[in-house]
Figure 1 (cartoon, rainbow, N blue to C red):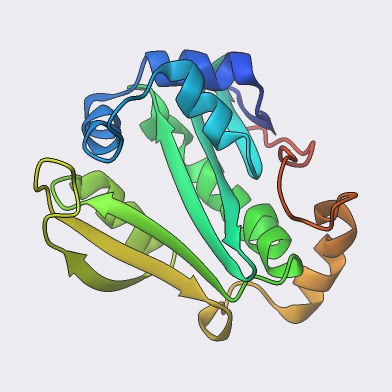
Figure 2: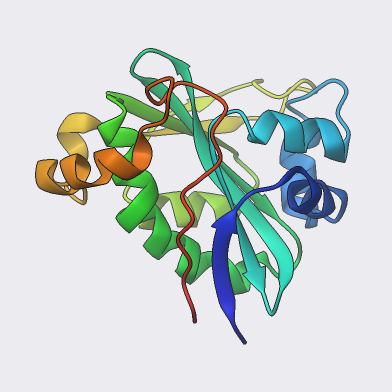
Length: 189
Protein backbone atom coordinates (compact mmCIF):
# COMPACT_ATOMS: atom_id res chain seq x y z
CA UNK A 1 0.00 0.00 0.00
CA UNK A 2 1.51 3.32 -1.10
CA UNK A 3 0.93 6.46 0.95
CA UNK A 4 1.60 9.88 -0.56
CA UNK A 5 1.17 13.28 1.02
CA UNK A 6 0.27 15.79 -1.70
CA UNK A 7 -0.94 19.40 -1.82
CA UNK A 8 -4.68 19.57 -1.24
CA UNK A 9 -7.06 20.36 -4.06
CA UNK A 10 -10.72 21.31 -3.93
CA UNK A 11 -11.56 18.08 -5.77
CA UNK A 12 -9.70 15.79 -3.34
CA UNK A 13 -10.91 17.53 -0.19
CA UNK A 14 -14.50 17.54 -1.50
CA UNK A 15 -14.28 13.79 -2.14
CA UNK A 16 -12.95 13.14 1.37
CA UNK A 17 -15.60 15.42 2.93
CA UNK A 18 -18.35 13.59 1.01
CA UNK A 19 -17.08 10.25 2.37
CA UNK A 20 -16.25 11.12 5.97
CA UNK A 21 -15.85 8.43 8.58
CA UNK A 22 -18.63 8.59 11.21
CA UNK A 23 -16.44 10.13 13.96
CA UNK A 24 -15.39 13.02 11.75
CA UNK A 25 -18.90 13.61 10.40
CA UNK A 26 -20.23 13.79 13.98
CA UNK A 27 -17.51 16.25 14.98
CA UNK A 28 -18.15 18.51 11.98
CA UNK A 29 -21.96 18.28 12.22
CA UNK A 30 -21.98 19.64 15.76
CA UNK A 31 -19.64 22.54 15.01
CA UNK A 32 -21.20 23.92 11.83
CA UNK A 33 -24.81 24.90 11.33
CA UNK A 34 -24.78 24.41 7.58
CA UNK A 35 -22.04 22.71 5.63
CA UNK A 36 -21.48 20.75 2.47
CA UNK A 37 -18.44 18.80 1.27
CA UNK A 38 -17.50 21.62 -1.12
CA UNK A 39 -17.84 24.31 1.57
CA UNK A 40 -15.77 22.29 4.05
CA UNK A 41 -13.12 21.76 1.35
CA UNK A 42 -13.03 25.47 0.47
CA UNK A 43 -12.63 26.38 4.13
CA UNK A 44 -9.77 23.89 4.52
CA UNK A 45 -7.88 25.51 1.63
CA UNK A 46 -7.49 28.79 3.56
CA UNK A 47 -4.08 27.86 4.94
CA UNK A 48 -1.65 24.99 4.64
CA UNK A 49 -3.60 21.98 3.40
CA UNK A 50 -2.56 18.48 2.36
CA UNK A 51 -4.16 15.23 1.35
CA UNK A 52 -3.01 11.73 2.27
CA UNK A 53 -3.53 9.34 -0.64
CA UNK A 54 -3.56 5.56 -0.36
CA UNK A 55 -2.85 3.88 -3.67
CA UNK A 56 -3.87 7.05 -5.50
CA UNK A 57 -7.17 7.57 -3.66
CA UNK A 58 -7.61 10.62 -1.36
CA UNK A 59 -8.37 9.35 2.16
CA UNK A 60 -7.53 12.17 4.59
CA UNK A 61 -7.14 15.92 4.60
CA UNK A 62 -5.15 17.85 7.18
CA UNK A 63 -3.48 21.19 7.70
CA UNK A 64 -3.44 24.42 9.66
CA UNK A 65 -4.68 27.94 9.09
CA UNK A 66 -3.86 31.22 10.76
CA UNK A 67 -6.79 32.72 12.67
CA UNK A 68 -4.98 35.90 13.63
CA UNK A 69 -1.36 36.89 13.98
CA UNK A 70 0.37 34.10 15.94
CA UNK A 71 -2.72 31.90 16.46
CA UNK A 72 -3.29 28.90 14.19
CA UNK A 73 -5.91 26.16 14.09
CA UNK A 74 -4.90 22.61 13.11
CA UNK A 75 -7.48 20.29 11.53
CA UNK A 76 -7.84 16.84 10.04
CA UNK A 77 -10.64 14.60 8.79
CA UNK A 78 -10.90 11.61 6.55
CA UNK A 79 -12.62 8.56 5.18
CA UNK A 80 -12.85 5.16 6.86
CA UNK A 81 -9.35 4.43 5.52
CA UNK A 82 -7.82 7.44 7.30
CA UNK A 83 -6.51 5.24 10.10
CA UNK A 84 -4.01 3.73 7.64
CA UNK A 85 -2.75 7.24 6.84
CA UNK A 86 -2.15 8.35 10.43
CA UNK A 87 1.51 7.22 10.69
CA UNK A 88 2.44 9.14 7.53
CA UNK A 89 0.43 12.20 8.54
CA UNK A 90 2.07 12.13 11.97
CA UNK A 91 5.54 12.06 10.41
CA UNK A 92 4.58 14.89 8.04
CA UNK A 93 3.17 16.89 10.95
CA UNK A 94 6.52 16.73 12.76
CA UNK A 95 8.80 17.26 9.76
CA UNK A 96 6.85 19.71 7.58
CA UNK A 97 3.68 21.21 9.09
CA UNK A 98 5.14 22.07 12.52
CA UNK A 99 8.23 23.76 11.10
CA UNK A 100 6.19 25.64 8.47
CA UNK A 101 3.73 26.99 11.01
CA UNK A 102 6.58 27.92 13.38
CA UNK A 103 8.40 29.69 10.51
CA UNK A 104 5.25 31.75 9.95
CA UNK A 105 5.51 33.09 13.49
CA UNK A 106 2.93 30.95 15.28
CA UNK A 107 2.91 31.26 19.05
CA UNK A 108 0.00 28.88 19.53
CA UNK A 109 -1.67 26.17 17.46
CA UNK A 110 -5.04 24.90 18.68
CA UNK A 111 -7.11 21.85 17.89
CA UNK A 112 -10.53 20.91 19.24
CA UNK A 113 -11.89 17.39 19.38
CA UNK A 114 -15.30 16.03 20.24
CA UNK A 115 -15.04 14.46 23.71
CA UNK A 116 -16.63 11.26 22.36
CA UNK A 117 -14.03 10.97 19.55
CA UNK A 118 -11.52 8.79 21.40
CA UNK A 119 -9.41 8.19 18.27
CA UNK A 120 -8.85 11.92 17.82
CA UNK A 121 -8.05 12.44 21.51
CA UNK A 122 -5.42 9.68 21.49
CA UNK A 123 -3.90 10.99 18.27
CA UNK A 124 -3.63 14.55 19.61
CA UNK A 125 -1.82 13.18 22.66
CA UNK A 126 0.58 11.26 20.40
CA UNK A 127 1.18 14.37 18.32
CA UNK A 128 2.45 16.07 21.46
CA UNK A 129 -0.48 18.43 21.98
CA UNK A 130 -1.37 19.52 25.50
CA UNK A 131 -4.95 18.98 26.60
CA UNK A 132 -5.88 22.35 28.10
CA UNK A 133 -9.50 22.01 29.10
CA UNK A 134 -12.90 20.48 28.54
CA UNK A 135 -15.30 22.73 26.64
CA UNK A 136 -18.74 21.82 28.03
CA UNK A 137 -21.57 22.49 25.60
CA UNK A 138 -19.22 23.65 22.81
CA UNK A 139 -21.13 21.74 20.13
CA UNK A 140 -24.30 23.27 18.70
CA UNK A 141 -26.38 20.52 20.39
CA UNK A 142 -24.53 20.75 23.70
CA UNK A 143 -21.73 18.29 22.88
CA UNK A 144 -18.56 18.52 24.93
CA UNK A 145 -15.18 19.07 23.28
CA UNK A 146 -11.59 19.16 24.46
CA UNK A 147 -9.21 21.98 23.60
CA UNK A 148 -5.64 20.94 22.79
CA UNK A 149 -2.71 23.13 21.85
CA UNK A 150 0.92 23.36 21.00
CA UNK A 151 2.74 26.51 22.11
CA UNK A 152 6.08 27.78 20.89
CA UNK A 153 7.76 27.11 24.25
CA UNK A 154 6.39 23.56 24.25
CA UNK A 155 7.45 22.66 20.70
CA UNK A 156 10.23 20.28 21.56
CA UNK A 157 9.88 18.63 18.14
CA UNK A 158 10.44 21.88 16.23
CA UNK A 159 13.95 23.24 16.75
CA UNK A 160 14.69 26.81 15.73
CA UNK A 161 17.08 25.56 13.05
CA UNK A 162 14.38 23.30 11.58
CA UNK A 163 11.88 26.15 11.61
CA UNK A 164 14.38 28.50 9.99
CA UNK A 165 15.28 25.90 7.36
CA UNK A 166 11.63 25.41 6.51
CA UNK A 167 11.03 29.13 6.22
CA UNK A 168 11.89 29.28 2.54
CA UNK A 169 9.46 26.45 1.78
CA UNK A 170 6.78 27.85 4.05
CA UNK A 171 6.72 31.46 2.96
CA UNK A 172 4.62 32.72 0.12
CA UNK A 173 4.04 36.14 -1.44
CA UNK A 174 1.81 37.26 1.42
CA UNK A 175 4.21 35.99 4.08
CA UNK A 176 2.39 32.93 5.41
CA UNK A 177 -0.99 34.50 5.79
CA UNK A 178 -3.78 32.80 3.83
CA UNK A 179 -4.52 31.08 0.56
CA UNK A 180 -1.61 28.70 0.09
CA UNK A 181 -1.95 24.94 -0.02
CA UNK A 182 0.82 22.77 1.41
CA UNK A 183 4.30 22.11 0.11
CA UNK A 184 4.82 19.62 -2.69
CA UNK A 185 6.48 16.94 -0.58
CA UNK A 186 5.40 13.32 -0.51
CA UNK A 187 5.93 10.27 1.65
CA UNK A 188 6.01 6.70 0.41
CA UNK A 189 4.97 4.06 2.86
